[in-house]
Length: 263
Image (tube, rainbow, N blue to C red; front, side):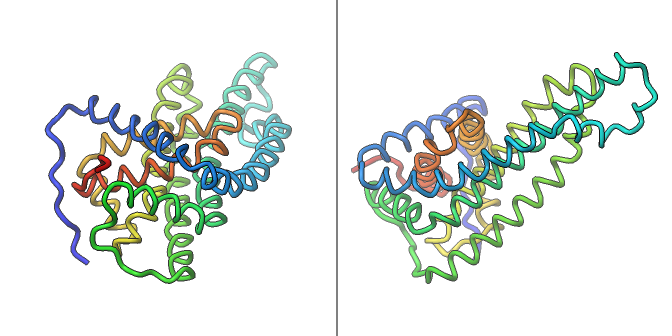
């Protein structure tokens, strides 16, 4: 399928970034209008949340050992210098785990709750005029494609996360600029992952949605980064996940030049 050419908005990048973040709030409002759907949407996120919280707690418990494992060169250093570099290493390990954990959580939750999130996304689009060019996609085929694309995104984010992990050792820069870059990188991959359902309904796979979102990257980054930051808040991922799915339907429509206003 040819990728439609969508002209990027002429407004500034900062304005589009904020507009993208605002799509998450709009998604939250749309989602909260349906209490029954809201409850269904939280259940898959709650299941994934319990698993990932347990995994992250385990990581924090062993973070000192992991920090020592990745800094063998500091074994013979003085106590102060060794302790400082391993604190930095521990922060870098936690940061990398946070980036990959958020993306993996999203992938697992979307797989577990595929029917629920598909319904949320579809219902949001119905309120905005329906899905132009919709195609019938069998459930198992859709789930298989979703899992494959999610694995590709997580693997790519891991490749990017390794240099960020290394950059985390740079004094000051590693504790200021690198986390911001990590949030933007994570936000981009989250946006790509979350818009999967509305693009699948239009018969579009990962390469096509990547190309379309690139045409208005600031908006996609604003949405994805807002979701990423919310997911880092304790229980934020569980509570925000369904709203993120609703917001992603808005992002997909906006990226495709379709109406995001209720008639």
